[in-house]
Amino acid sequence: MSGYTVAVLPGDGIGPEVTREAVRVLRAVADLFGFHLDLTEHPIGATAVFQSGNAFPPDTRDAVLAADAVLLGAVGHPALASARGERSPEAGLLALRHRLGVFANLRPVSLHPALGHLSPLRPERLHQVDLLIVRELTGGLYYGEPRGKDAVSAVNTLRYTVPEIERVARVALKAARQRRSRVTSVDKANVLEVSQLWRETVSRVGLDYPDVHLLHLYVDYAAMRLITDAASFDVLLTENMFGDILSDEAAVLAGSLGLLPSASLGDGPGLFEPVHGSAPDIVGKGVANPLGAIGSAALLLRYGLELPEAAMLVERAIDAVLASGARTRDMAPGGAFSLDTQAMGQAIAGLVVEGGSPSLMSSRGYGLSLEPL
Image 1: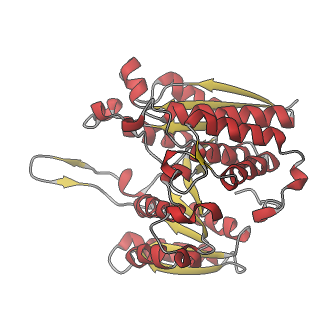
Image 2: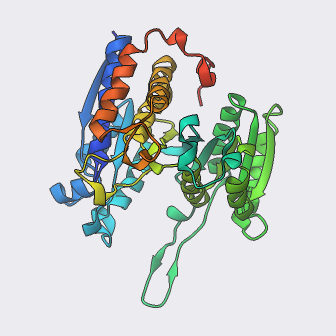
Image 3: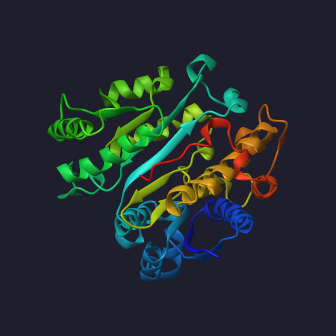
């Protein structure tokens, strides 16, 4: 029996609630496919600060590097909103990404046919929306030096090197080959020298992928197109801050931030997490949507453990439960019935168990052979 170790970092707020359901689904998949999962839990974020004073404590640092993949809930707590250094949950998240060396964040965005009514956009703007945002994750303004502030001024440094741009560009171009062979690279090359280097480098790397159509857009125009013509995008390649903003904007296309998963990939263990935050206002109420976390578990199976058939089965179960009319509170208007967080996780896990042979998976391209990224 094959075995894998997954470091589970439930984090803060609703993180433990949604992560619990993702773990439930992972266990169901492991039982069905006959592999062993060693799921070890470790603190991060505010939870870790309250325990030890450090948002990314040494034991967690060691555990994530020893794992085959890392599943994260969410970080953040109102009591630590102004914390800095080791006591900042958000700094702990950045340190986690740096520790793992994950430089490419993948955020798939698509609209399930049953959820069109949830988006504020007109149905014609949502037709055939299926895009993948590839965001550079370890460079740019969030990490650049020097940085700091005093009473009268502040500075952050936007910096990228050619190798940083090359490696994330290759991830996007490879991903496009498994989709519709189109990459749109986002920058601000009319104003920023860093963006000029970004455009030049991406263009040069693109020559190695003659089968992929490469287009460049300024970020402001890309933000508008994401709302007015999202279906025209296949793979959207961005630097760190632009990707942070555009990927959250893209949540309006799916109808709920709670639906969106993400994968962060590098040279070591991958990091998998829903894109939503810790949502402290709904903690303990059983209304958090676990589908983003469960979708992240599917990405963990595909990219972290290289088990594409298992990932397909989880995605098929998510589709099936939504098609049945099941909804969490954020999706409840128009749904046939509303499930709490645990019941939704149980429904997905039950469908996984009942899913039968992976050979049955043919809808939405589930039969595709995926090239490793």
